[in-house]
Amino acid sequence: MQEREEKELTAYCGLYCADCIHFRNEHSELAEQLKETLEKTDFQSYARVKSPFGSEFQQYDAFLAVLEALISYSCSEGCRTSGGCGEAPCQIVQCCREKGFEGCWECGAFEACEKFESLKPRCEVSVIHNLKEIRENGFAGWSKRRRPIYNWQQE
View 1 (cartoon, rainbow, N blue to C red):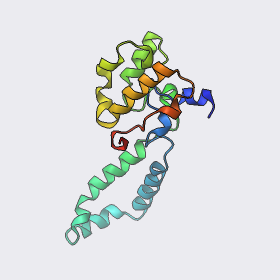
View 2 (view 1 turned 180 degrees about the horizontal axis):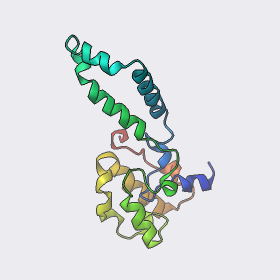
View 3 (view 1 turned 180 degrees about the vertical axis):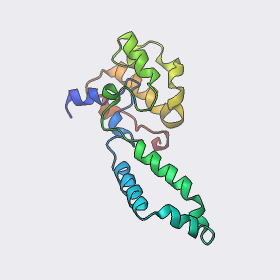
């Protein structure tokens, strides 16, 4: 991997965008195809008729909501380019840009920063580990030393 690409895919918070489940994923496109197919066949009407006879179809609206989420949670570029990975502007991206930081590893207070609260349920361990890794050993090649992004991937 080229150093330029590694930098572009390194989020300000220390996560590696290419590790994200939503980054350049296949499931968003497949979910869109499934939604279109279901709409063409008016499957929602079928589910309403079928639901008294099959309890699984009573949850069709919830299924559609999950399908919509799968479609919408997709990105094709890293947060450095897109400005964050959520719909709202990312506080971490904004903070780093305001301070002129390449990333949180340049900040002396990242370990106690409240801006990481929203990341804790998914990737708390990775964020701190990766930021320390970049700070202590430099940016070049850091992605080979990173931790998996999500808490459930940790040993």
